[in-house]
Image (cartoon, rainbow, N blue to C red; front, side, top):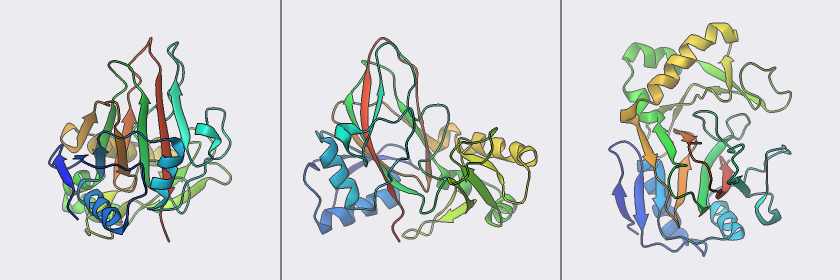
Length: 264
């Protein structure tokens, strides 16, 4: 099966049209979507209208769900534990997932796999989401830096840097990951959850972490998505970072998200 795709940038992202994902995809469509994800890492599927249950069912055809632990800022859509409602009221306040470039669920094993985010209510302008390709970023590094990073691991903790590492939601991952389908290598780091490099102190780790984040989020490795009604965005947390822009006021924003975990 061939999807109707249009690349957004040379390294990252593609629009997909002509699909109706309100019903679970059959094997041929699922394989086509996985192939497109391997090539583009972020898919923007247009003209969808999914309920929280339909979004959950779609995501679960690819991998097990991530069930978010209890948190003051977490709201479940229609009471479904697999689907978060990411909301901000017109009066402002916290934008869930804001605060920096990151990937979902890097603080546990199995870690985050594909995330599915569907627009329900949008401000007239603003609230865009940035995405960055850690594959393109890794490819642009010098051979010496690539070789050094391949031998390193990093500690990811839910509470993030500047706080004690979480007692249960803290794990160590290799800094460089290889895609099982394409063989491409990508950086697996983010400053929201990474506290330090394994075997190093946070103070020793910080200069390289900050330099790598600045490198990964260079303009040529990124795209900025302006949400439109009906957009469903799927991204691969293993090889991308994302950043929700908290730049709007006076209007509500409602999204629903189902994150999945790496399949065994």
